[in-house]
Length: 447
Image (cartoon, rainbow, N blue to C red):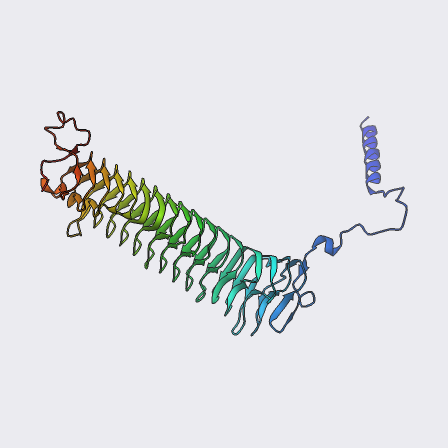
């Protein structure tokens, strides 16, 4: 029985092996053709070689036709030449992780010719050591996209381009990091010899660090989301009119304001700290909301004209929060600033703010200091300042405020010149009997 079963098993195995090794007994009609893919089908792109993309007097390689191109190795420049010159629309150049390497007297890693070209993509590699710009597209490249590039140790990083993603410009000695562009995402400009970014654009999650000029310089309207400017030898952010900054950080910039925006701009949820200059400065018609300014050498937050709401300004070298005219400062906190906690000139509202410990380095620093006329000062809390409320102008309304322990002298809680509307002064003994809804609270002394 065992021998019979073994014989049947051997027979089945032989049949299966025979079927597996047999060819098609009915081949298709017609001549025999290859079944493998062609080289073009495997790699449809065009290799950058002397055969496919021969250079000329100003380029090692030159792309003259639309298509998708790729490097097959590092490319070293030559005097008077760019590594790759693009002279066509609709070109994609993939560096494939290789380097474009400059030499003395060479021009740029990638350039475009004198004609106007559009729809250019450059990606995935490193461009280094060029005497000119690492990538020099200039104004002749429209709709140019640059992705996943390291532009390192050139004279300048990139000039021209439209959209940038995950690009790094580092150590470019003279020309800065990025010059021009409309959209930057996850990019970095680090230790460049001039400005980090020079562009009026949309920036998202970008970094400008330790550049010799301003971190972000935008002469026109720009948008910044979750960007950081740290340790630059100029301002952190210098932006034009109608700009928007959200959740950004400016820290340790050594010559200029941490954040400066033009008229009709909005700054929300930002932090500006330890800058040599003002923390945040805004022009006319601006909104500053939910921001922090800490340890800057100038004013913490200053506006020409605008609304400042829900902000904190602490330990700055001048005033905590200041506004020239026609402004609203509301629900803010000003602590331990060397000058005034809050300072306004004319036509403004100062409402529901907390000011404590301001003025230690000023001749006289106040919790709230009103310089001009026609202001409303209401519902503020001022304690432990040189002076609580210093109302130096006339025709101001001061009501519903609290002042205590300002230099320990009751007469320093409210210093109000004649000609203002000042709510009845009440204290702990008259609080329960004083029914005046406009009353201010504090010790009974008004010089």
